[in-house]
Length: 80
Image (cartoon, rainbow, N blue to C red; front, side, top):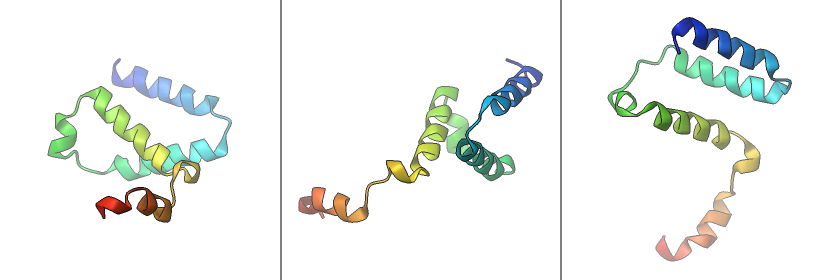
C-alpha cells in the first residue's frame, strides 16, 4: 500500500468511526507519535509487531482494562 492509498484509507477509517472516545484516543496517539523520531528498537520491529504495540498502548489507556495496583500486589505478593 503506497502513502496516498494509506492516507486515503486512514481518512475513510476516521470518517467511519462514530465513537468520540475512540476518535479521541486515535488523535492522542497520532499527536504523540507524529514528531517522535524513530528509535533503533522500533526500526527493528516488523509491521505486525509495531501494530501490536500500538494496539496495546490504546488498550492500556482504557480504564476498563486496568487492574488496581492493590489487586496485582495481592496476586503476586509472594514474589514481592
